[in-house]
Image 1 (cartoon, rainbow, N blue to C red):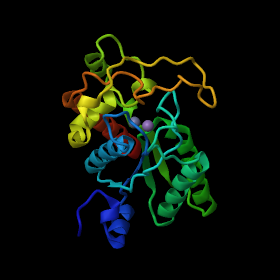
Image 2 (tube, rainbow, N blue to C red):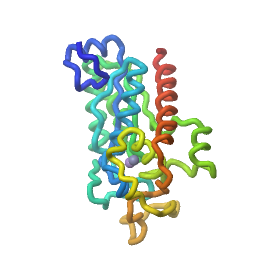
Image 3 (cartoon, helix red, strand yellow):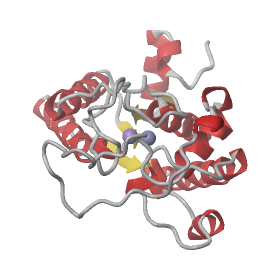
Length: 257
Ligand code: ZN
Ligand code: MN
């Protein structure tokens, strides 16, 4: 028997056996999106996949193939769609992909799901996808599904944020391609980070509303929204420890493990 937490590396009888024994399916939700000049386009794929992998190991679960594309990048949280290399899905396409994956795995016996979101803009469309997936399964008479859906960055201890941001944590939205994501990448995939290209600029500031299309000067030219200077692998390690331990605890609680 192949011992892998990645379901795509198992044969179908191995998958079926694990799922029938109660294995939780972790579905990481990524994006292919610009992350400034110093990070690759797949940051939002690598980070939730790594968290899901570790939590799946801690809970006997399986990691489903990560969704490589996400809902559209927004100027105030991701830089926006105008950056070359950013390739996104319409909300319908994104939520329907989740719906279809959950429906098919549920039809084949999966009863426990955890959606691990790694891209801010996926949040609500992933709620829709999960809701539609569960509705499709109910129409087939399958009502005993338990599903969690979470943003991995919400699982962090206040004292960790105090240590990283001694002047106060300004919030998740502007963290795009900034200190947190850069430090996590330095911990997990330093080969994909070019710290010499970190922009030498502070936090962006936006009015509390959107303008469509974004007017000239509205977008951050570099695609980095806060400040990535001072990123270190050690900081990424602190964050990752919190994400993994706190999500593991939440999953064990909700699924009675
Ligand atoms: Zn990101
Ligand atoms: Mn993103």
